[in-house]
Amino acid sequence: MLEKTRIDADAIPRWFPAVLRPQTKDAQAHSRPQRAELQRQTALAENQQDPLVDVRLNEEIDSDVFAKKQCELRDRIAELTLK
Image 1 (cartoon, rainbow, N blue to C red):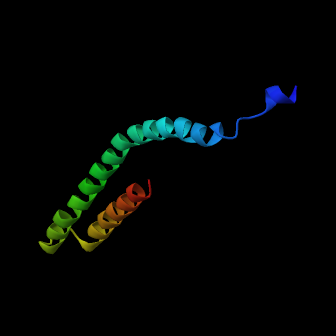
Image 2 (cartoon, rainbow, N blue to C red):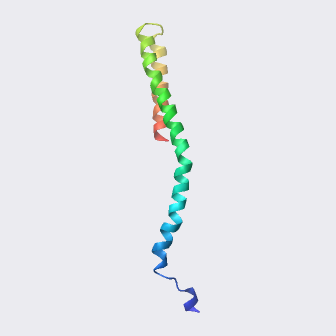
């Protein structure tokens, strides 16, 4: 009875990579588009910062509006970076 339940110790080190490698590749393939989208959104938020400063420097918006929008952009970039 014990002979049937015995595990082949040599097979275990081969089994882990054989099982984990395809699962890891699948997970990476799934996360690539998500990561690219997060990077795109981060770049968009970062690219909004310079025009915002320009608008403020030209006194087209007041300092309260600028501070609020700048804080929103900074928070959005931080949120995307943490994902």
